[in-house]
Image (cartoon, chains in turn yellow, cyan):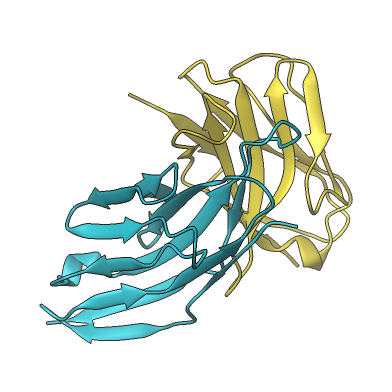
Length: 113
Length: 115
């Protein structure tokens, strides 16, 4: 009963490096989301997808890219990492647009030094 | 735009005390309202939800009622336990046609319960 799986759990990047945060879900959900959580703040939406091949920007998309080639996977790409991207990243999925429970992964704690 | 304002923490209570965490919202449509809980080192889990006015969500002794007239969704529990120590997030999801269905979160309230 995996739900939403994120990897890695922790990562330290140097300024200017790139990386991909992986997210996969096994619930056949169409809607998937990437959020970032900064200390003392709620979660902010980075990107979202309403189905395979369809993605769009959320509130804070700068410095990130996503793709959605399958229903299951929704990777988040960081190009040219900056200290401002130090955060905890959560992937989530939902079967319906807002009415039902969103399922979250356990998060990726990223530090950019 | 849509927004959620919740009570600032941290909140520290003794075991068996009564808990209230205030949450108010601003929304243009008819949102669904949620409380999520985040235990240390974990992702968010749905605690309870309400999808229309006057609905009461409840789970694990926690309750919240969707009050459209006061645009509020306050979380309550009559007797907290040490195991309730966590960060609690109030959130809304706008179900109107143009929405992508993502959740709008409050900043979170950290609850610590002492034995």
